[in-house]
Length: 466
Image (cartoon, rainbow, N blue to C red):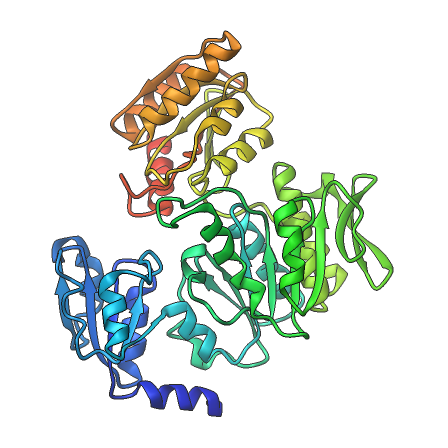
């Protein structure tokens, strides 16, 4: 049975003209289906042409749509009472501002999900570690016997099933800065993993990017929970933004509430009581950054009353998410890793630090306007050879060349027009006992639909090697 709040929202939308702006992203098709199912007149708009949206349009062929595609896709917003923008669309576009001034209400799929959800929501954001931490939270809740629905930026929209998720269940969402734009509601339980420069091709400044991230806890209530990275000075300072219960995770310090390291063990502290989660050697995930991810997830789950046994079971058995330092195969003594989810330099640096082997690195992709000097510093002296692809290949090459000159070092480095050619060259550079790693430090949109497609293509190419 629907709640009074859900019924009121549906009644407000029913019969109205709703524009869905952006069909191609993973939430577009589910949102269109949902709006149609509750009685909206749906208009769908996308800057791509029909041939680029063949899969999406095929999935919508049984739904009556007013469709606007191509370069003029935002020229037809008159008459819409509601507009739902794709996360990749800035809300301050002139066409959207004009439509809002004319009376349209601007929203998004994730905002509608928050409005309709009866179950409590846990939301995880940050620059790095979101996907792994989100998945760990979901798995710990499941191990505790709870019904869990995982979605958001992690790759699955929950909008079509939100009305059937009971209040006794748990919703766990990965939340990107794009999704958090204009949000005026926060999850009841939040994690901020860390913050570093990212998505500066979308955000007007680093300050805007950081400010948007605070929406994950800025609207919390006194009964809510916020888990913050104590070792990141910026995120540690977010504690003042929420009236809720704040706890921390830290590899470097002892915290009064949350999770920290002591004698190579993860300690969970709540109300002055300490419990041992596990020894860090029991964690199957590679790298110090994944110790932090386990601590963050456990700190939140402890606050939500998850049993120590359930948290420990997941902490010591979880082997990772697809596309994050995923071992694809070993061939002729060389390990091949798919780290396609590493779409920023900090993620690639963390991956390089986690792997105990000499590395031949494949990097490059869509330009998010992030400086590559930190990546170059991590690469030189750590990487045996570097294959570069995509828009950012020249910029990364220049940063690495400057670092090589500074260190008076040399390293094989080539630029390629395809991932296949880069992989074949990397295979030639690798030796037994080393690893070939796709860890792009960039987004995928110049060559692939998303990081998942990039990772799948890489795995297919690796499995074709002989």
